[in-house]
Image (tube, rainbow, N blue to C red; front, side, top):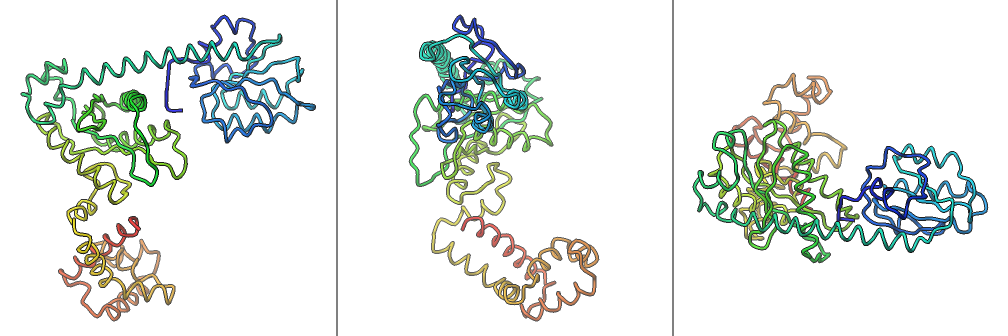
Length: 412
C-alpha cells in the first residue's frame, strides 16, 4: 500500500482495545508501521490479499493440527506484515515453537488474545485511527506543496539570488555548501493507464521527502505544468550523489510495491550545479531527461548519464532513426554474422581492443587470451571488414557503432 502513516505496532498496543493483548515475541518489530488491518484465515492465499505492512487478525478457523499453520504463517511473514494477532482458545490452544522463532526472524510482533474478542470492533477502531492520521498527513503535505509554489518563479529565472535565500531561509554563505538540481516525477508510459489522484500525488510527495532526507538531500516538491516537480538541495558528498539518488529511485518504487508489468515511477533529474542560477537550465534538462526515459524506455534517470540516448533523442524523424540503425548495422553486421556462424568473439574482441586504446597486451589480458590469439583475431577482423581498423576515422565510426548497437538492443 502506498500510504505511509505514523501508526506503529507500538501505537496499536497502546490502544484500549488491546489492553488484554499479550506480545509473545517479535518485540523488535514494535516500530513497524501499520498500513492497514486485515482479518485472514488459513484457506486464504496471502500472495493474493497481502501487500505488506498489514496487521493480521486470525483465529485459525478450521485448524486441527497447529503445525498445519506454519507454512501459512511463513508466507505472511515473507510478504512483510507489520504484526500478527491470534485469537487463542477458540480453534487453537497452543502455538508451535517454530512459529515464534519465525516471528523473531522476521521482526514481527506475535500478539495473542486469550479471551474472545470481536475482530470487527478492533478493525473498525483501528481503521478510524489510521484514516485520521492519513488525512492529517495529506493536509500537511498539501500545505507544503502550496507553500513551495513560489519556486515556479525560480524555475523560470525570475528571482534574484538574494530573494531565493530569503524564501529558503538559508544564508548566501550556507548555500555554498549545496549542489542544486530539479527532479520531475511521472509514471512510465505503458499500455496500462494510471490515473493520478490527489491522494497519490501527496503520498508520493511525502515519501519522496523522507527518502531524499534520508539520503542527504533536501526536497522541495510543487507542481509545474501539471507534473509533480521538485528542487533538490544536495548537502552530501559530491562523489556519492548518484548512488544516493538511485537509492531514492529504488526506494520509492519499492514503497509503491509495483507488480511486474505495471508502470514504475520515473524520477528524471536535470543538470546539477553548485549555482542556484542554473536551476532554470536544470529544469529544462530534467524535462529532456523525462522525455528520453519515456521515449526510449531508458534505465538512466540522471541527465549527465544519458550519453548516446540524448543524441538519439535529437532525431525526431522516425525514418531518419531507421536509416541510422541501418548504417550502424552496415558497420558491424559482418562481425555479427561471423560470430553467430562460428560461435566467435570477434566483435567483443574489437570492442575491448578499442577500449584499451589499442594496447594489445592489456586487451589480451582483459580478454583472458594469449597475445598470439589476439593477433590472429585482429587479422580475421581486418579481413572480414576489409578496412584498416586503426584508421582514425574508421576507428571512431566503429566505436560509435558498437555503442549505438548496445543502445538499440536495450530499446528493442
